[in-house]
Amino acid sequence: MTNSSSPTSTWSQRFETALHPAIVRFNASIGFDIELIEYDLTGSQAHARMLAKTGIISQEEGETLVSGLEQIRQEYRQGFFKPGIDAEDVHFAVERRLTELIGDVGKKLHTARSRNDQVGTDTRLYLRDQIQTIRQQIRQFQTVLVALAEQHIETLIPGYTHLQRAQPLSLAHHLLAYVEMTERDWERLGDVYKRVDMLPLGSGALAGTTFPIDRHYSAELLGFSRVYANSLDGVSDRDFAVEFLAAASLIMVHLSRLSEEVILWASEEFRFVTLTDSCATGSSIMPQKKNPDVPELVRGKTGRVFGHLQAMLVLMKGLPLAYNKDLQEDKEALFDGVKTVQACLEAMTILMQEGLVFQTNRLNAAVNEDFSNATDVADYLAAKGVPFREAYNLVGKVVKTSLSAGKLLKDLTLEEWQSIHPKFESDIYEAIAPRQVVAARNSYGGTGFEQVRQAVQAAKGRLNP
Ligand code: ARG
Image: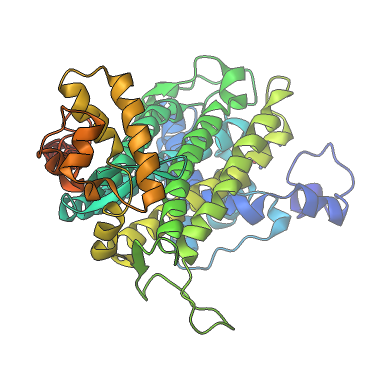
């Protein structure tokens, strides 16, 4: 058996014996890089066109390569092209099939190219698409949140610091906080995209090529805005993958924080939401249970994405220039990061759209049964000229005596208020009513209903420019 026909040795005649079967398996990436096949075909078609345009191969050869690659695409889509690990990776698998289909011309495809600049190209093509998808998913998630916010501008919910009741809020304001977080995610991905949108093809194995290639033409065909200016950097840069996983990690942080809140809200202790049957599951043993599996899974999956970011950073830190086989390890982290973020965005969008019913009676009762209007008493006095710190200390005392008397601030008589400070008048009751407490925070970015209404409009404007 000659080397060129030996399935385990796609490379040169320098090799005399085949790879050990365990090493074939160890070395192969086809099990996961098949994910790149459509991008590999597209990248190769552009490369073939460039080779023809520059006269490195004939026009006819170029066309044969392009249509052969297209045929592989159809075979793959119809489920007929299923390369095994003997193909090593997706690049070899395609090249081998191409030669089977169109004969010796297929062997010209790899002229002026290396798998090193090829795999970098494929990965960037893949990630460009995925980033666009994720940005659209963020927009859908925000659209659902904004619609929910619009229904709940006047719904009050306790606001917390230290998970202690702090000040009441418009529920819309709370939901819009997540719209702001994910707006930064959307922007950040747009920024990451600029550095994914750079073409390494034409860097060769590491040093460029002896052929008169036209890298800018390849970039134009593949829709890349820039080409790598240094071939060593071109084949060995994975900054874009690190950046993507960092952006993905922050998306997960935001989804995970919302998840944690939903889980709390759905608990018997809070009862701020109930879960609809379409997004909750039961227990195999406790018939009364309805579990918030969706937000729990999102919270749980967050760690995976952080792990992929860490893995990618560690993968890169000790690599000498230029390509090293270590880089084959970038893919599973990247692919799983992409899939996890996409799946979590989809699930959370559905959860927010149809998975929760806010218990407005319960929310209303909650904001009426605590001391979260205490700041407003201090503000009331401060507005009447009492220095804020002095007012704050006075109110602290009132809270203490009310607590021991088992009363809320709204239960104090006007005489009691006036014995605390003569500046209290009958309008104190209006000032500490939860609805007024919220309405009064009309500073820009605050929870006052007027501000929140404007914030809903601003968010809508961004979503439908
Ligand atoms: N499967 C390889 C990867 O994922 C392709 C590049 C191989 N290049 C090489 N010089 N062995 O990175």
